[in-house]
Image (cartoon, rainbow, N blue to C red):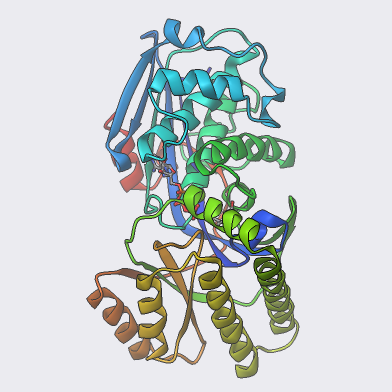
Length: 395
Ligand SMILES: Nc1ncnc2c1ncn2[C@@H]1O[C@H](COP(=O)(O)OP(=O)(O)OP(=O)(O)O)[C@@H](O)[C@H]1O
Ligand SMILES: C[C@@](O)(CCO)CC(=O)[O-]
Ligand SMILES: [Mg+2]
């Protein structure tokens, strides 16, 4: 095992298709230039330690105690969640079945991947894992997926299942397709623990990065898309993806003939958006293209409200931006959290600045973001963003 490794993975924004994607519809998603960073250190303390400064969680366990929880076999566990292992971990962490609290979810996901990845070798190494993120936690930008992707990459690398990539002190590197598939599968298990019933789109974006279409597990990178300018707004209203996803399912069960057509319509929105983006890259983008993108945003935002995942703070976001001629929708699971606002090429700087100020006056965080960042990466210490290294080096 290498003495130390540092990984990072990006957050994501969903352009269209959140919730519908859980039920087999198309989603379009982009990676963000906000990342989660993880540092793993091999130790000889006979302890497993985790430091999660974003959620003020610092814990450790004796390796001998964790050994008692080892599942019978490893490896294949990246396909199905091992319910018995989850039960044992819940007992260890002291949480009941329905728990949703931030800490317990993060710890369960970590211990689940750690134990499963090392189960095959029968030996549990002592190590310290520290994770710090630029992403707001639980706000719709895929923080859970970026966290799970980093955990999967680091623990698979520590176990020797995938190679450690770096040869010199200053590089950043990415794995090949086979290793990324494996990272993605294990990250999906982390998402299952945190989300309950994830579609897999968030961990796919966290692993591969870029701009992509996701449909029932099938990933299609959109290599040619116009440069999209987006405002991200965090309403700071807390919410849980798990609860919201379960709420949509309840509505589907209660009113199938009403909700199923809505999901079908969201699917058509995603497909029409994809088609429009492709026309914009083949021809010169016109104002009419942007009008279509804006109408699709409005339609989808209404659909998401019908599904019950809106929030008054998101309504305010849409109203405030529309007053400046800009169109917004929630992104991710909704219920609060973040929204995206499309900027047109001709949108004047003063309009953008005034919109940002209006939103900040509502108490929201708001910033312009670039999309399409790299997926999961391994960094040498000298190639990590200074701020991230500074935080991770404290532990
Ligand atoms: N930096 C972090 N440190 C520790 N745990 C984290 C971190 N980021 C995310 N998590 C875990 O992920 C959970 C948030 O996941 P959740 O899916 O609800 O929100 P999200 O992923 O930010 O939004 P969405 O799924 O809508 O994109 C937290 O409760 C915590 O358990
Ligand atoms: C709400 C949802 O569609 C997106 C969360 O970012 C959930 C999922 O796809 O797993
Ligand atoms: Mg999530």
